[in-house]
Length: 425
Image (cartoon, rainbow, N blue to C red; front, side, top):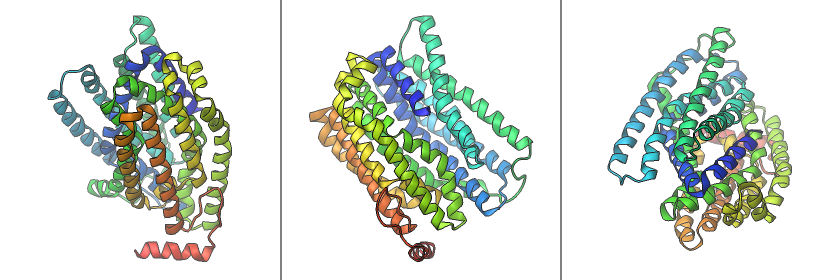
């Protein structure tokens, strides 16, 4: 449902703004998303993992102290990043994209606090709230605010869409904070327990931050490089193809959002058999659900784009077919990314993401100049499949879990050997 609403938001913006303005909006949101990652310091993922693992071990964690320090740290990091970004933009040519970036940078402040808040809620087992706030309701509020302003003024520009996003994130931050405050006030979580200093939080979250930064670069480098090499209209066409391709992965996103804390809990409880059974069943369910979205998007992409987005975006059809096929192929490898993140092996995938990023950059430089949006989609798909395959291999070797749709299941003795070797290393 959340993926459908997000795609619906993209459809409305694409039709209202047109390829050029929609491309400018997409470029700014992608750039801000990358700049947001160092401001997060890896704390949303760290809090999710540690709180979920603590539930599995029946170990108290001082949530209040951690939240206070987390807010302070990400707030300072966001301040530094926004200040540096605004300073750099002063020395760049005064283009419309430059002016839009100056506005978009302010999105970092409410977004970083929002993601820390829903990260805590997710770790506490409020997975539905995490998903509802972070994607479904956020997209709906963004759409409603944008529609109200654009229809009232008769102006359909990327600047209004970015400002609407800011207001939507600020509203959702308020809602999520009220929810978390009600949990704290209701004594539903421990009042005291293990405390970490600010330096320890930063050091521990650094692995998550680097991993998320490189992974996000992998996911968005194609769009950013297309904007730098081609033009804003090409970015608008490609963003439409990306939105359609992500529909193939809707089941993957939904399953991992719900099950990621469960991976941490089962691994902490050393319940290998149940963890293996869970990831295998999840992989097959994701594959089965993905077929229904992948087949029409692969074979009838141009017709679907023309029907949904309009004839102005028909040029994105082939790119959508390539991206849909790439996403579908990755399903054969199951869910290795969240398994590594939620079981304390997040540092191991940083190098794998870096390899995927390097592949994507090289292919973008080689394929975008001659093939445009199709070249970007080829680069992104090849890099994504390579990265997921390498992550699957890492899960098998480090955790002793086969997370793929098919293949042999490691026995418990082998899994125990894997885990002992990892812990000794």
